[in-house]
Image 1 (spheres, helix red, strand yellow):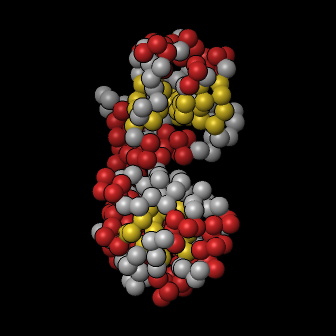
Image 2: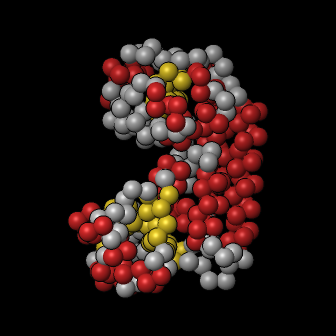
Length: 276
């Protein structure tokens, strides 16, 4: 299901905006945005990826964002479903639409302007346009502040984002990923650009990438006999391995591209350039 443009959301606003009091929120960034706009009390259920703020975990879980159960969603009697782009599967979306429950898709984004539009889209769906506009402006301003600091860096850090290191195989980010976008916003350089998405790296590819920093989601850097991911033979021989430079961040905070994005970008920048 394609994301509704902001203009389309505005046109659809009378259907859902303001009146919705039983919202199913699908997607971590959408739920975070609802909370940031002060409307979490209107959410009656959430998907598995919605884990922040902590109080949302007490809400019923209707399943993973791309594997929703229509029965689970309908069981909480929602009057609005607010979902990240890509929520599904299509069969579930079709069932929910036949039930005549407003289903609003929030467009995906991996840049400052896109995150701002994402916040505004949620604001329209909730009837909180002014509050969302103010939040969107703050997000763009703060990201721009980090961008200004990043522009002053003479030699950008080469960053290797490792999604997984299970079994000694490094699954790393190429271009066109949320991780690559975050590295760029924080003023780093993605160390691997020869492919899109995520792929396993050979030892030769790791050495050629020569990362200054390895970036991972929290909880995924263990293994290798307890020595950690930097003890991987190829990584150990890179500048990151020799300097022991591993940065771990919460996955939703780092890659969610929600209302905390500006803070995540600033934190990543500070981790990449601790003396800056």
